[in-house]
Image: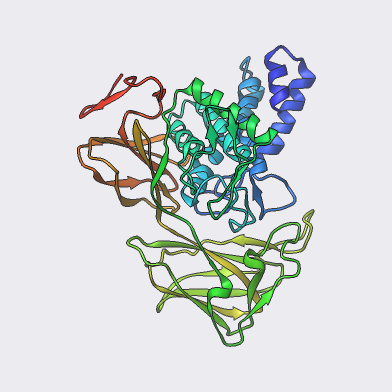
Length: 447
C-alpha cells in the first residue's frame, strides 16, 4: 500500500487506484474495538485471529493514512466515503490503541491477547512513531504529535532500562530491550535502518527529546494460577501454550466446573480499577459472575465464541471488560454458574492510567481513560508550574485546554480519550538542538 500510494501520487493509472482502494478497505476492516473493548482500536495483523496483536501491524495505520491521502487527490465523490473510513480506522489505532500501549509500558512486540511478548525493538517503535506523525499530518490532529514525542523517548532513555537505545555518535540503534530491562547491544540492519528512519522523522517534526521515565501507573497482569481456587477449580498446563490463534499467558489457565470459584487480591492504589478477565469464548454454554467483596461487578457469557471460521482452532481467547470498576485492593471473585469455563488471566489497570516522562527541555505526562465515562485524575509533574493541560477524545479531537501554575493538577479525561500535561517548552514544536523555539508563560505558549 505504501508503494501503491506513492505510485498513485506520481500519476499511476486507474488500475493502481483500484488496487490501493481494495487493499486499504481490507486492512481498515481489521480495525476493531474501542477504549474498553479489545483490541482497543488497534488494526490487527491478520484476519484469522481475533486474539493476537503484534507490532507487525504497526505500519498498517500509516498505510491507511497515506492511502486516504492518495485516493483523495483529486477529490472524487466515489472515494470520499472510503477515505473517511480509512482515516477513521487509522485514528482509532493512533489515538485509541497507542495510549493504551504506551501507558502499559511501551511499544511491546506482542499482546496475544495478554502482553506476553514484552520485548521492544526499533521496528515496533519506529513504525508507531511514524504512524502518529503521518496521521497527524493527514488529519491535523495535533495531539498525536505529543504521543509521538512519548513514543520516541524510547530511543533516548525514557524506557524500562533507563538507558538510550540510540547512539547519535555512531548511528547505532541497539537490537532490542528485554522485559527485564536488559539491552541487546547488537545492532543489525533492521534496527539500524528503523532507528535512522525515526531520526529523520524526528528531525523533520522538530520534537523535543524525553530521556527518562519519571513515574508510571498502568497495566498489570494477574495470572489465573495466582488466584485462590475453590469448589473444584484447578490449574491446567496448556499443551500447547500457543494455539496458532492465541497464547495462554504463563502457559496455563484455571478451569472452573459449575459452582467453582477463583479469587484474587487486587493491587492497592488510590484509583478504582478496570478489570478485563481474559477468558476462553466457545460455542457451548458457560457463564461466570464476578464480585468485588460482596458487590456484583459484572458477568461474562463464555458461549459467545461463534463458529471457528478461518481461525486455526475452535473458540478464542479474549479480554472481556467487567461492567463496573473495582476498588483498588479489593478481593475479586469469579463464580461459575454454568461450566466448565477457562480463565487465563486478569488485565488490571487504573480507570486512568498515567505515564510521566521528562527531558532537558520539557516534561510530559500522558493520561489514558480506558472507561466509557469521564474520570478525573491527579498527576504531579517533576518540576513546578506553569503547566498546560490538554485533553482529547478517542479520535484525538481537542476536548479541553487550560493553564495551571501548580505542579500537581487535576485532569478530567473524556471517555476513551487521553490527556496530556506539559511543563517546559512545548515538545511538539521544539528541536532539542535549537533551544528557545517555544517558551511557555502563564498565558500559554509564546513562539
